[in-house]
Length: 145
Image 1 (spheres, helix red, strand yellow):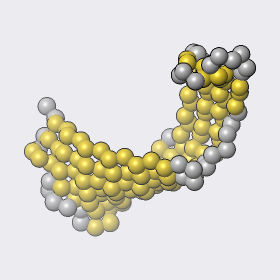
Image 2 (tube, rainbow, N blue to C red; image 1 turned 90 degrees about the horizontal axis):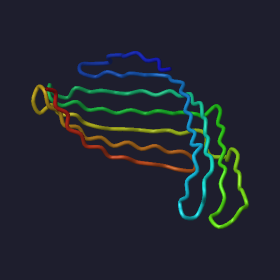
Image 3 (cartoon, helix red, strand yellow; image 1 turned 180 degrees about the vertical axis):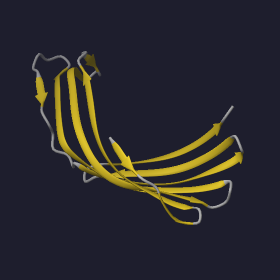
Image 4 (cartoon, helix red, strand yellow; image 1 turned 90 degrees about the vertical axis):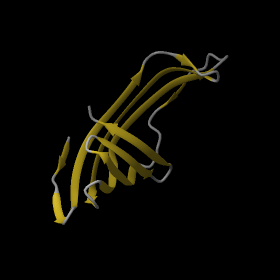
């Protein structure tokens, strides 16, 4: 579920605040061997709520600058891992492990219209929490036929 609306705050500038709820579920009931562990079953479920805002600035008719921030919190989390070490018959099971439930992210980017039907984009995003972080750089080229 995703709720948003757009607010124009000046010439060429718009801010889009939003709120969301999402549920993620992953299950792998098949056994696989990574050389160290034999994983018999993995199951994970998580429900998150969050808020954020995206900003768009139309710098020129061809250049668009973007940015945004978001905070998400896991209100419920359930995980199960059933595994054993290769060469043993002892099963090891893990339930929900405690990790930081709140994550925040920020992003900046630029899109440039090369032609009316072609666009080049460059963006950077960072996601962090108390126990992990990740960053990503993206370069895209889009062409409409």
